[in-house]
Image (cartoon, rainbow, N blue to C red; front, side, top):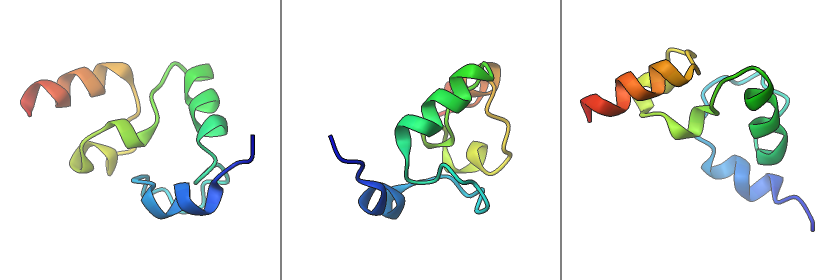
Amino acid sequence: MDCKKHSNKAGCACTYEPCPRKGVCCDCVAYHKAAGELPGCLFTPEAERTYDRTIENFIRTSKRN
């Protein structure tokens, strides 16, 4: 399976620009999973901009919407 980095990057909601995993979803998910976090694309735009990728923040911010 070929990585679709170009098309993934175009739709990537992550605002952390120096991230080397941007557009490489499998690397992004693995990185955040190892850290006990979720990738930024699962958060609301407001919550994503805080760079708080914790599961607790996801639950807290998801309940508001």
